[in-house]
Length: 394
Image (cartoon, rainbow, N blue to C red; front, side):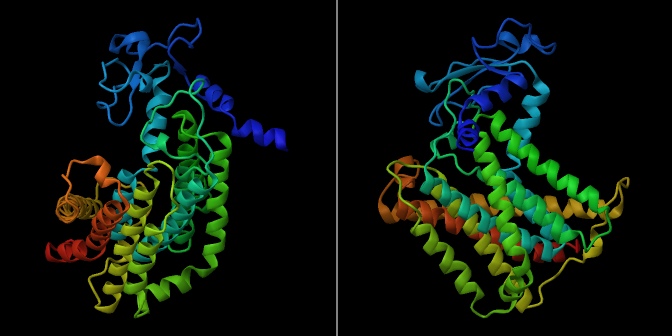
C-alpha cells in the first residue's frame, strides 16, 4: 500500500498521462511524427512558452512568443493532439471562477432556488476545507520536468487535495441529487452526466500538470465524503438559512473570521484570496436568500426548466434573456466594487492601487475580496431578480 501511494504521489504517472495525450516537453517528444493538423501555426505543430504570472500573457499552443518573464519560468512544450489539449483546457475552466460566476447564478435564475442554495452551501464548505487542507498538509505539486505545467498561477499553491476535483465532484453530484426527485429525467443519465463532468475536470488537472494522481483521487474522495455527511442535513440547513433571524449576522461574521484566521504560510499563496472569494460570494448569496424569503421577493417557478432537447422555444429565449441580463449586472457589480473597495483601501493604507504586494497583505486582501464578492452574491440573488421582474422576465 505504501508503494502504491508513493507511486500515485509521484510525478511520473502524470508525465506518462500527458505523453499519452500528446503533450510533451520540448525536446522530449521522441522521434514520431506530429499528428496531422495546423502545422503552420507554430514550431513543431504547437510549441508555447509558459511564464511566471508577472510576465506577459500566455502564448497560444501553436506559437512561440518572446516573453518578458524570467528565463527560469519559461517552459516550452509540444502539442501533438489538439483535441485533448482543448478538451482538457476547457475542462480545467470548469473549476475556475468563470464557471462559478456563470453556472451558479444560471441555476438560481432559471432552474430552481432550492437547487442553487444547496449547491452553494456544499460548494462553499467543500472548497474551504479543501483550501485549508492544502496549506496544512503542504504537499508539493508535480515536478517539472518531467511534467509539463500549463498553468503558473496555481503553481504557487500546494497540491493535496485538488480543489478542482473537489469542486467538480461537489457541484455535479449535489446538482444531480437535488434535481433527481424534482425533475423527470432518467436516473442513469443524471448519474453518468455527473460522473463525466467530475472525471473530465479531474483528468484536466493531470493534463495541465497541476496535480498528482493521489491529489486528484484524494480531492474527489474528500468531496464525496463531505457530500454524504451534508446530505442528511440539507433540509435543516436550508430551513435555518431562510428563517433564522441570526442568518445574516452569522453568514457574514463566520466567513470573515475564517478568512482572517486562515493558515499562515512562509510565502504568499493565492489560496487565502481564493478562499475569501468563495466564502464572500456564498455569504452575499446567503444573505440574499434570507432577505428574499423574509420579504417575498420575486420567485422563478420550477416549471421554467424542463430537461430535454427541444428546438428554440419561448422558454429557452426567456432563460437566455434572464442569463445575459443577469450576468451583465453581476459582472458590472464585480468591476465597480473592485474599483471602489480597492480605492478605499488604498486611501486607508496609503498604497497605490497597482501595488501588487500591498494588495496581498492580509488587511487589504481579505476585505477587498470579501466585500467585492459578497456584493456579487447579493446582486445575483436580490438585485437581478428584481430587475428581471421589472423587465417582465419572470
